[in-house]
Image (cartoon, rainbow, N blue to C red):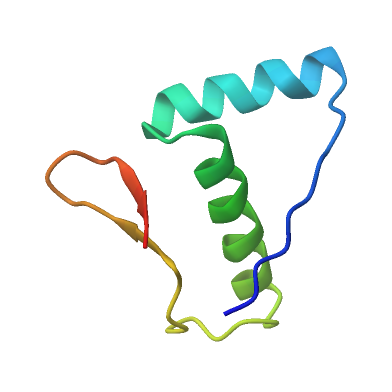
Length: 67
């Protein structure tokens, strides 16, 4: 599977929001952004709700692990 690498410049308030989301969800920034994009794409019907993802959330530790 080909992966796309994206670099995003965040405003300070956006960076702060991302950091807070990461802490609350126990995810690294890359994993948090991937989860946000995937969740929004499913909400909009771009991805099916049961679509397989390369990101697996370990239930025991709530840490995102990229396969």
